[in-house]
Image (cartoon, rainbow, N blue to C red; front, side, top):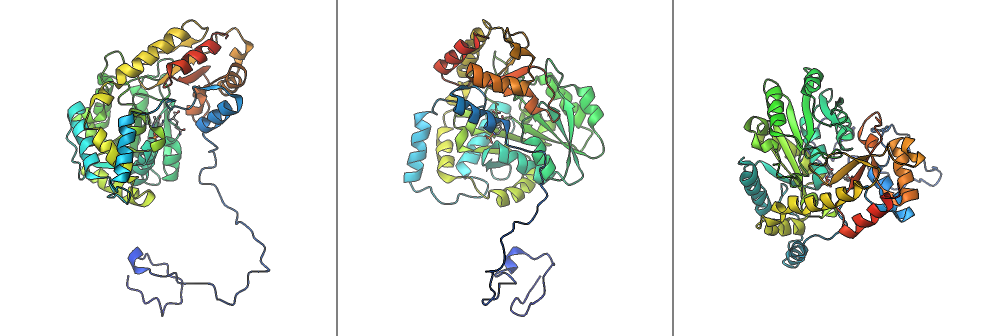
Length: 425
Ligand code: PMP
Ligand code: GLN
C-alpha cells in the first residue's frame, strides 16, 4: 500500500508493509498533561493460563535453598572443553561480534550438514535446509508457529518435554495427547493411529527421550514412517540427545529415513552435545520448503543467534571426536550411577539414552514412598538433600507413577555424594 503519512489522519487498518511505515500515525499532543491520570495496567487474558514456572526452575531453586545435590534440572555441572571455550574467545577477539546472517554463519551450517550426512546419510543443503537457532526450545516453537495453523491438531507423546504443549497452544492449535506405554515408555502405534484425524498437522517425537531415557529402535522409526506415509502429517523430531545413546545402539535420526526426512524438522542442541546448555545454540534441519517457512518465523522471533559462539562451534566441529566419544563418556557415568542406585531401595528403570535415569520410589523404607511424585521430589530435596524431577510434570494431567527423574550429567564426585544420601532411603 502507498500511504501519504503527512496527510493521513485516520487509523489505518490496511495491512501495511513494514517498510511503508516510517513514523507512528499518532503522537501525544505536546500540551497534553498526564499528571491527573492514575497509573493502571489494563486487564489481560493469559494466552497460557495453565502455565506456571517450569518444574526445572522450581526444583533448581529449591535445591539451591536447601543446599541439595541438584540432579533435577538437566545440565552438566562440569565445564565444556577448554578448546571450545578458547575458540569463543578467539572469535570475539577476531571481531566476530556483529549480527551474523539470519540463518546462521555458513561455516556452521556447512559443518552441521556435513555431520548429518556422515552420521545419518542424508544430504541437507546448508544454504536452504539448515538454520542455527537460540536453543532447541526456540527451534521447537519456531517450527510449530511456522508450520501449524490455528485449528490444527498436533500429536504429542506423553510424558513429553514441557515446551511442546505451550508452543502448540500459542499457535492456536490443539495438542492431542497419546501416552507412551506406561512401564516401558515405548510408542504404541495403534494409539497413535487412532489419534490421527483430518486435522492432524504434525507429531512431535523425542528420541533419545526426556524424561524416560528410552531410545526409539529402527523398527519403531519404520513403523512411524509407514504410518505417516499416506498422510500430510509433518514430523517435528526433537533429537537434542542424539549423541547420548548407549550399549552400542545407534541413534535413529529421522534423517536416516528418506520418507521421514522429507516431512521432518530435525532439531538438535549444541548445549547437550558440548556441555554448554547456557549458550543456547542449537539447529534445525528440514527440506527447503519447510525451512523457508521456518525462517520466516525465525527472523522475527530471534532474527539471529550470537555470532562468536557460532564461529567457535564451526571450528570445533571440524573434529568429530568430541561427539563420537560422548556415548562412552556418558555411558561410564550412567553405569557408575546405576551401580550405586542398585544398592538402594530405589527401583531402576532402563536408561538407554539421554542423561537421565528414572527410579521408582514405591519400595523405599521411608513413608515418603506413598507421596505423589511432586511432593516426593520436594521431600527428597529438603530431607535427603538430592533434587529430582517428578515424572508427573511431563504429563498434561499430572499422571502419577511414583517415578522420579535423576540427571547423571554430573561430576563423579557429585554423583557419589548423591548416592551416599540416597543409600539412606
Ligand atoms: N528438548 C528436550 C527433550 C530437552 O530435554 C531440552 C532441554 N533440556 C530441550 C528440548 C531444549 O534444549 P535447549 O536448551 O537447547 O533449548
Ligand atoms: N531440558 C532440561 C531438563 O529436562 C531443562 C531445560 C529447562 O530448564 N527448560 O531438565
